[in-house]
Image 1 (cartoon, rainbow, N blue to C red):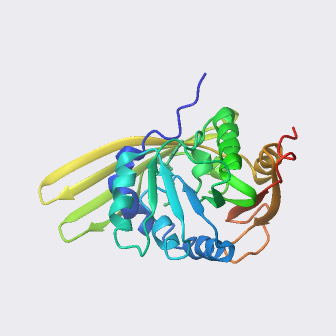
Image 2: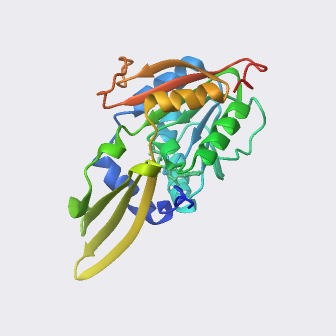
Image 3: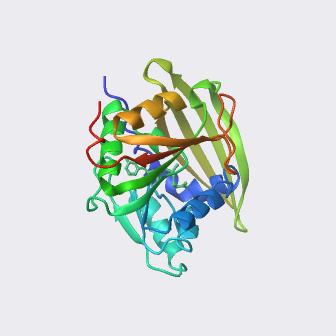
Amino acid sequence: MHSTPGWLGWDDYAPFYDWENARTVGRRDVAFWCDLARGRGGPVLELGCGTGRILAPLARHAATLAGVDRSDPMLARARRRLRRTPRPVLLVRGDITTLPFGDGAFDLVVASYGILQSLTSERDLRATLSAVHAALRPGGLLGIDLVPDLPRWSEYSRRASLSGRRGRDSRITLIESVRQDPRRRLTIFDQEFVERRGRARRVRRFSLTFRTLSVPQMARRLERAGFHVQAVLGDYRGGPWDERANVWVILAEKLDEGLGTRD
Ligand SMILES: C[S@@+](CC[C@H](N)C(=O)[O-])C[C@H]1O[C@@H](n2cnc3c(N)ncnc32)[C@H](O)[C@@H]1O
């Protein structure tokens, strides 16, 4: 049976994404990606750039910058945010399994905030790692941030997990359920956003599906795809990773051509 594709749901999520993330992940990972881009100095690509939460700050540190995302409503928000950036940023609507860029075009590919967990099949993960490998120059870096331990989240049903104001006259409540499918390593979030404005009430429902590999499992996929795992970090200050870390960052370097075909 095919898994639900991980790109589903994001169009519906787009109007609420920044509101929710301002209350959850916030900007805690932003400086890490900006420092990495500044340190490398070459062209940067962000996979699944969404509303530009990371892409917009990156624009101050990368002379050449591109973002790719499959969701038009997410990209529309990114486009608005990027109007204020110092340099033009290329935004492309597309699927990360087939990247529409020239071979060796980038020095750094950023896969932040669990984007690789939106690949819900082994085939899509393999295709994406191969597309990233082609888009990087030899010696280029793929930076991956995985949302830790989604498979260990407790399941719950219709929990009011967030509530707050948006602007002067709107109030939003998120009612969330979590389901686990351990056999396929999937975690499914069923989300219901209720927005109240005066007496008007609007409800939007959608599901997001994520597939989580452990850090060692992901490291093996990277080595098979022609990368060398350079570092595994357990925080955004460069501290080492262990099983209990609440940040899972992997930095993987593209091996020189010719070595990348090892199986
Ligand atoms: C968790 S959001 C991350 C957005 C942004 N990187 C951030 O950190 O805020 C995941 C994004 O990946 C996009 N996405 C999911 N699967 C995708 C795919 N197969 N190809 C392209 N974009 C995808 C979604 O549309 C969404 O905008």
